[in-house]
Amino acid sequence: MEKIRIGSIVPGGKVEEFLPVFLGYGYECISFNFHMVFPEKDLAAFAEKVQAAAGDAPLEVSSIGYYCNPLENEEQLHTLEHFIDNAKLFHTDLVTTFAGALEGRPVEEAMPRFREVYGELARRAEHNGVRLAIENCPMGGTWQRATCNIGFNPKAWDMMFNQVDSPALGLEWEPAHQMVQLIDPIPQLEQWIRKVYHLHGKDATIDWNRVKKTGVFGAEEFALPRTPGYGDTDWRDVFHVLYMQGFRGDLVVEGFHDPVFQGDLELAGQRHALDYLKWCRGIPG
Image (tube, rainbow, N blue to C red):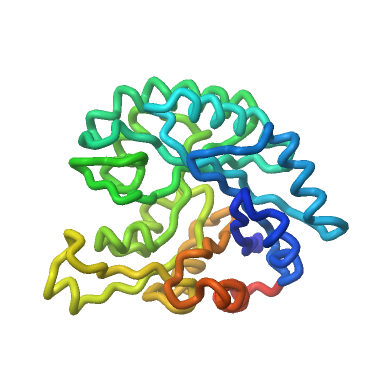
């Protein structure tokens, strides 16, 4: 049984600030993420910045992420292609992203464009020995009015993978993004595990009293994002599914969301998440 590595996400613009700290805490791998904008000259220059920040500390890169809307934004599409072509600079074969969307329009209307764009991206990824993992985040969108990512719901996944049938294309999954849709995450993980290439360690707490009083259309927030160990998910159940289904991949903590462990308490939350997830994993390391 292979040990599932536990890592953390470093926002691309905060490498010097957080990478040395996370490596010092003992995270076993790191993911680097950019959202919509890639401000670096190119990935070669960013790789140099990463290496300088890491110094002599061992660094295992789990994934590089560029979360964008490649269905509508041509510049973002080309940047995503650049990530696919250059993932090898970080010794990883995993690029994480959004599926994109036709903003403000229903999910199914984006499927022809998804097939066109991701058909080519999947072929590019296969050529480079790279896998693409689409995060399951709604980004505030709904089925009727998507924002920048149609890949947030299992009904959409069925449609997406029917449109583009490639081993290079899978999911970056976390329970919190399903819980905000009132989907039970553990049975879903078990059902979709063959397409899950990467996991985000982020949880949620559902306030059922608010659901009963004000519903789920945004009058009040009913699902708070939480650091693993403080939300509703028992991550021992997550690891059970991963082990039983032979998952080979990493789980990286996605910080900077918890309403309690933020600001001066951010790093305390990150350390607790690492300790908790190692305990849930069981296998020492």
